[in-house]
Length: 334
Ligand code: PBG
Image (cartoon, rainbow, N blue to C red):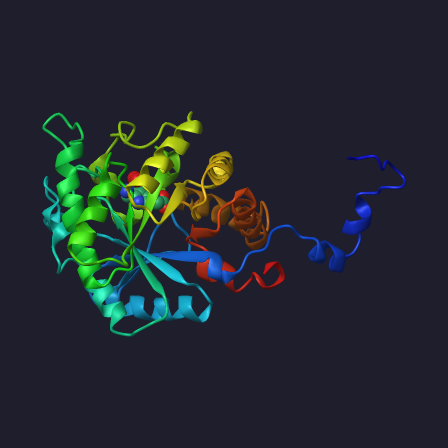
């Protein structure tokens, strides 16, 4: 194949001017590929800084609307909402998760009133609602109760769908959840509610700032999620997890974290014909932001390089806390 050798072939020829680098670029990215997560909190006119996530805030529902408008103006097609639940409403059976008047359901209904052209996604997991910060309910020894959790996840999904949520994103890694949630949605008449499952979600160190943001960190203490989230030594196991979720009714899947898991994205892409979303998680975001603030590199260029790497590996879209900021800076990469 490579019969041409130097100097007949010079790899630098096509790189030598900007127009030819652009003409032959294999990967492009547009604001349409980005999903912006938002943290929401109770109250009015609130915009709370999150210590471990520079430039990211928790918004009260009234202030969130303006931020959603900014996302739309920048060409973003979907948002992902996470509630910070006050301690009084947390419980061992996470009942607040199913309350149709809980914070996230109210936020969804409020956004929907505006008839915006943007998809609303919400996590299905119990960690904002449980007393121990776990994604499912636990027994007295702290062991996850998979099957009992499924019933709650189905109710949580129906409350979200009833409030107008477009995409249910199961993120708690319980076995059998996608199938059960799909059945519940069908029974409830929510035929077009999409399930985008976090199929390959690793027990990662990089969720730290997120747990700060939603306030589950102090509840979780030093307990790990190793018994239900994936072991980061495994890549091929992701194929199995994704296969299960597809067969249970997932419309697209999420791989998370993203930067350290490009091999997983590429492996899944080779195996399945289903849209893949890469989730650049809170720890990845803060690492890039804080390193940029220290002058270690140019923050924007480093973010763009990371986003391109997800697409290069095979992701079609990316969840990133820098979505709105980066959407404005992608002109050269569309
Ligand atoms: C909850 C959930 C987590 C994240 C998204 N949904 C944290 C966790 O599993 O502990 C992490 C997102 C991020 O770090 O940005 N199940």
